[in-house]
Length: 268
Image (cartoon, rainbow, N blue to C red; front, side):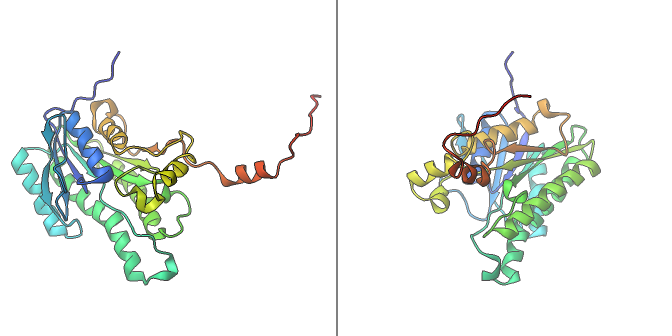
């Protein structure tokens, strides 16, 4: 039996959906038949399209609550519905905690935690009045569950985002489902800035149990699943999309210092 994820007739908003992971998510929703609106502060270099269909772009600064409210009201009026919000917009430069003042770290928190909260509240006002309800998907990160040197504020924001999603899931049930995709490393057009050239990307990918970085469209496929009727009983959940995670460093250290011939063992 095939698993069909058909979102035809549904409307999805993907924040930060103009490039990278966000564009991959938007493409997956387009392939599933949904009407897609992507929003960002700057338009995409090329339209986000897939399966002969194109996402609609709307300029939006998610740190402007009145503008966010107007945006979702406009989507509801234009399309007559809103079925899914994917809170993808976010990111951070590499910055050690002591290398910048608190205001710079606060901006990272604002973009990665406060902005998704603002968007979710506005989307909920549209979804709560519909009998079909809706789905909100947070794009989290493994950085929220482990030390994150150089991106501490980002990791803290992602940890908070996952907690926020679990509480939203309780408060907004049963009308609106809220789940989190917890991402590992993803190969995007900006991968070289983080991992270097192709050899660097391959070397980093080799540290992942599945042997490579994720592709943006694979993240999109997971988001489509959470938005679909196949996930109708999933809310407050965190789905790990990280290729198996990271191999613990102590294993390699132990291997390097292990005797070439391990001692024999006897069964008693």
